[in-house]
Amino acid sequence: MTPDERLSLQEEIVKLKTQKKAIILSHNYQRDEVQEIADFVGDSLELSRTAATIDCEIILFAGVTFMAESAAILSPDKIVLTTELDAICPMADMIRVDSPRPEIKKFPGFDNPPSYVFPREFTLKDIKNRYKGVPVVAYVNTTADVKAESYICCTSANVVKVIESLPDDRVICIPDKNLSRWAAKNTKKEVIAWDGFCHVHERVRVEDVIKARKEHPNALIMAHPECRLEVLEMADHVTSTSGMLRYAKASTGKEFIVGTEIGLLYRLRKENPDKIFYPLRKDMVCPQMKKTTLKSLLRSLRENSYLIQLPENIRVSAKIALDRMLMVR
Ligand code: 13P
Ligand code: SF4
Image (cartoon, rainbow, N blue to C red; front, side, top):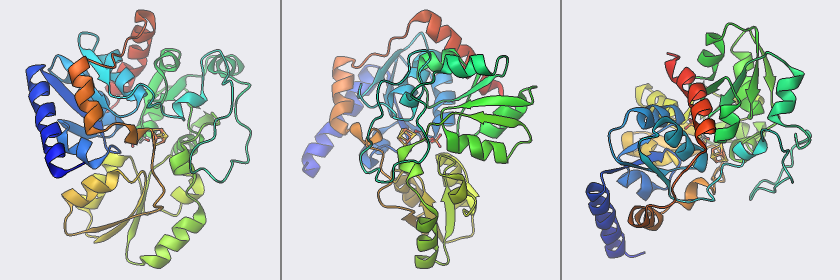
């Protein structure tokens, strides 16, 4: 795309978004140019909070579909659009309410098959039956119907606080086994984990951390809790994407190794021009997050596509789980 084409796309998006009283929300992993044109860029917790309180007629979500669904759950009076219908988080797809996953999907770039068994033969209802009365804490990276069957939601930023807020001594944490292990390490409660994972973070190995430390001995390592526990244990700081932005800004350190999807490097570099950021692995790219482009933003605004519509009973039950999370401070 030529700079002129890009400029005219940007102008058209701004014009339409003002005309239609639309707000663009973008996750920190989106393409640079999408983050640039968004009204708000953040992590899952910040995006949920913004979606719940924002004043506009249309919310256009640049992220993956569960994020747009969360906005639709929290804002029933608004039109909520997702830029790409097939931008589905593979981890969110690893748990189903009552029909098991039909197949194991191969993820691009995932060259190290996990050694554990996929939970194909289980469903959320199965695990709830097995541990009757144990509350389900659903990571926001889940579909609306899974949230609707859960007690409370959490994000990578508040998982420990959410678990601690519950009176129970044990909880079921779905779907990310890595986030669950991290939470278990940071709470005295028993955490029953689901066998899901994010292929972008799961691929990071201890050897990658050793290599990065060797290459950049003065750098601090930040890692997302979707990474394996053994990787997290080697990091200097474990936090959500926006937590990394805050940590890098506040730190006296000058160099940072970033253990999350590389889209975050755009804001890290922009907000800290005097500091240096290296990806922990250059292939930490989420293809689903990259599906949204300036062209798809414009198409969404022109056509009001793709509209997120949820059955009202699912929306109401999922909202209870999200609201419970938003009450936890
Ligand atoms: P956060 O931005 O909440 O840390 O989430 C990361 C993520 O993987 C979202 O898909
Ligand atoms: Fe899902 Fe991982 Fe992509 Fe986040 S980075 S949307 S968890 S696959």
